[in-house]
Length: 463
Image (cartoon, rainbow, N blue to C red):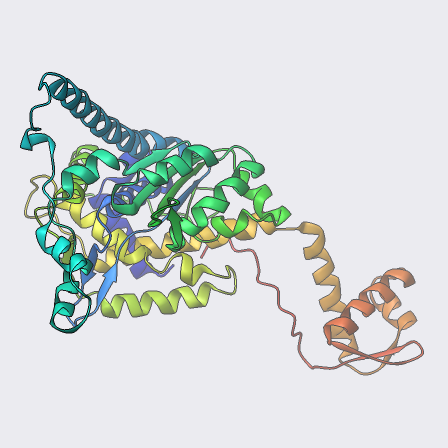
């Protein structure tokens, strides 16, 4: 990371008090901050976006995997617990309403129900459905594509789930049917690879937006996942190549501190103004997201205005550079920059603050970059094979000796620290299969190229 990006990152981490969020660990604090920002965006109604000055808009929302014991514990304590609390409170109010309605109807003695417990039908929608769908009546069909008026109470009581946890297949299917406006944030803790496979079967279509629930009247459901992996089950899932890896590779990972690159400890900017009460800011911002989601007095999703287009173009170019070390990262992390900016802004403005406290889009971009770099390095650590790395070194050395002209297997073995002949033949066979070396007949071999072509991405712990 350049010194300029390091300075911007340090400024952001100081502004949002990341070191305290991580209980002294800056890496974990940055992960918690990212989880908070993404969660706020994920709870908002579909269509929440950042509107750029050039007319383009960038949708927000991103699934996440908290990878490692410290990050998982802090995300569970500071993010998941608040989600669970708000959903539990909402469920309690909905249950109380149902009990009150039953008691009310029980005392009516067959009198007409009170308007407080009913939802009036939308006359325009009924008219459009009743009329012939031809000629002038065709214009009324636009009513059927517009949001249904007066649906808030009914939708809330029938489908109150915004957040669901403990996603065993049967429970998750039930939760999807009760998801509020067909949008759900799913949380689970990974314990074993078989559980990951079951989770992947349901959650992958969810985040892809191609899941439907219900038999008679199928409804589309989409959403995001927030997974905690304190035991690093991800390692086994990826190494064994199980089907669950498809889900794990479709979301950014928030990685504990060992993989690198290291994050700057924000000491050089201690004079820079800082936000206070970060956990309270998160609670307020998340509550506002929940209220906005439930409020049907306005049909417009939450919109922020930022000149994001040049930053997003630079972000996509950066992700494409990372494809070599993490295939698919461009899809998994594409919305991350906009989502972080969206959530951080709402936390930034959720409580009063000093006018001197500021942050910049460049700072958010620096945070997004370091998260992706750490994710790529974590993948390299998972797939790191010392034996394979040693073999690659031998293959490269043998290739370089073959660039001087045709050499026999015996001479190659002698020049390679008296390597056993059977090992030399084995390595030469692999080089021929790779297309690096030609077998000239007998025991003679010669390189095809003048430089080594099969470059395996190196494991980098600092970037």
